[in-house]
Amino acid sequence: MVGKARGVSVVSVVNNPDVRRECLDSSIAGREEIEFIPIDNTNGGFATAGAALNHGARQARHDVIVFVHQDVYLHSVDRLLEAAAFLTGDSRWGMLGAVGITSDGGYFGRMRDRVELLGQSAPDPLEVDSLDEVLFMLPRNLVLECPISEHPELAWHAYAVEYGIRVRERRLLVGAVDLAITHNSMTTNLAQLDVAHRRVASMHPEAIPVRTTCGTIGGEVKDRLRKLPLIGRHGWRFRWLQESLLVARARQHLRIPGVVGDIRSDVDLLQVGEGCVLHVVNMDDGSFLPFQSETLRLTRRDREVCFEAVSSEQELVAALRRVPPGDSALVTHLSLEHLRSLSAPLERSGIPALLGVHDGMLWLVTGPAATRLPSVWQQPRAVPFGGGRVLMPAEA
Image (cartoon, rainbow, N blue to C red; front, side, top):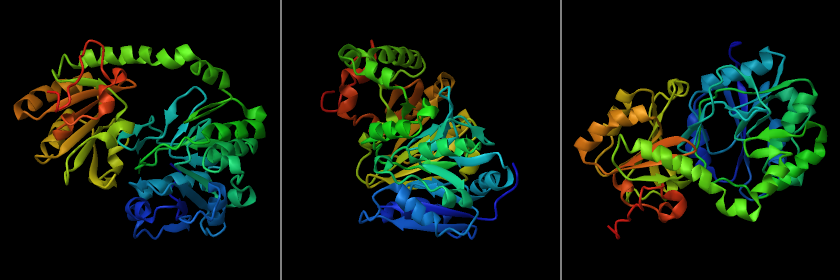
């Protein structure tokens, strides 16, 4: 580390003040080092993110400007200030962000997105191909001299990707660094993403291909292959078979039903019951936990969700024991070893449970949500090979 910035200016485009107040506002409240510049776009006055963010940048008084989504919770302002210091104290860096992807496809920057921990840890900045727009920071003098693109085809996608290319043209580095954030996103908006990627390619043909967290710009051949009828209809089956084998191995330790499903997108389909709480427990490698000092409580789809991270099997068992009767729990990033430690406690408790897997990551739901299953988990893609169909309550 190169010290700590004395202050930063935080700029965010706001179309939902309630979300902003619960997430971003509450995480920076009372911190004098933060100059907060929310840009009201509830009436659509700014046609592009770039126009709104540039407007905020012109008001900023600190040397580093942090551009961040309204639905982000910053677990550590001190960590943010430490990262910002790289932009003022190390002349190699021109742009830093919470999560980025390298040219060989590695994700760096440890963060929580919805209910999962993503990215490999980057305690110090690590050079990447591009940064995600969720949070990125720039030197104030750079963004005033070279504003974020306001092109209509980059309105809400890939504007940070495009900016990173321009930063590298100035022979500065673009890097991801651990910033300890929770992104409480409700949806993933991919509308016009392909248009934005084509625009970046046409603006910077010499920089293509470039990896992004939403695909490779310049990877159109692979995209066309995916759209072929045979691959489009059956390409999922190879991953499904791999996931099924992992479910089978996991069920050797926990004899409970299993599904193949992306819990990050399906979490809001869980039926926890009126007035009940979903408790999310992330198994962490130790890189995120130090920054989350207490349980985080946020709202998703008008229901309360509590988030915490643990790093040991003992802490995991204790966290599940703290879940009140009638509430449900979701545990992510489990290993087969973790399942062994949960076998006896779950059996003694008699609490219903359901195993899941997605992209090689094991997850577990306990409590009422494990019996009130969404219909998407009844579809062939969700039913593991040899696992049988998971019965809905009405069918049992």
